[in-house]
Length: 394
Ligand code: PMP
Image (cartoon, protein in one colour):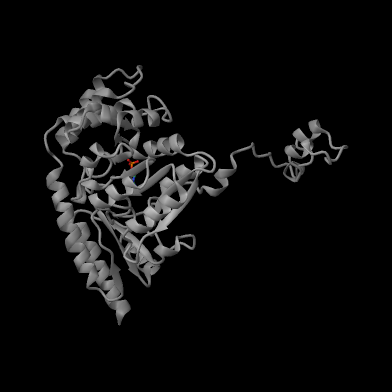
């Protein structure tokens, strides 16, 4: 195949016509009458499309969502406001009312909050704002795969620091990687997905002290963790917290996330973000939720209780290893993980097979991630696991 760049070479074959080349005459695909693929960035060849496989199921424990919806009254208020809102006008940008309510809820100055179209958008904006060719992101492995997609797309280099055998991130090796690679961005989820492990406040302080560059802690699941690191923002200008209303706040359908950090730092990230990205329904849903009283904490407490119950039950089963988690999900390893996944699916229970595909990272081999559902859903999972592993163990 001859590329257009070849024409610039002094030894380029003279008799090839650029016009005919552009018309695709030298491309075997064209000879075979297949249309030529337009040009794309080379990095895309290393980025698989993000897909969530969702086979038919009755019990959904595969995406770490809230198992219950918002109260009917609150849904109704959102619908009324949406009905009355002008649909022919752009949404507020920046979404100041939403940011004001977030700031009030988490008790920081409004200038320290920047809302976005869920945390994934803010993660992409951060990668674009910090990385470029030959600049590095240091992150943990296993970790949140979307961070790697965003960093690759931004043209950056990725250095992954492996967690220990129990999937706990270790500060020593992370700091060593920071010293060695001088990254533009350090990205670490806490609680981590897919493992549920956390970094302590002290761990985060040590990591922030090791670099002047950006340290982003993804706190998508922080409400379930009991770890509070927000007060470190006063000490470290390079620390940014990434949060979402998709998990404990139960608004996954509406796509709202936010960053908390230094106003100047946020203003740099803002420049890499598309305007008007939080649409009117999302702004209304977020504002209505945040303006209502505390409707979330009872459910968060239930999830934590259920997490303890389910993890304890599974840990007693032969051949099942359960890893510590402080999120609304947890990770297990079992020899016949693929068989267990299929067995559950046959009973209508869908979990996440994070380590059974041939392309799965070696650290996650034979691992499965299970979200905490409603009590009866969790009981169905435990009963199915008992049937499967007690039979396997025999
Ligand atoms: N960070 C982590 C660690 C996650 O697990 C997820 C959701 N799977 C996200 C960010 C993205 O959440 P959202 O885009 O819904 O805010």
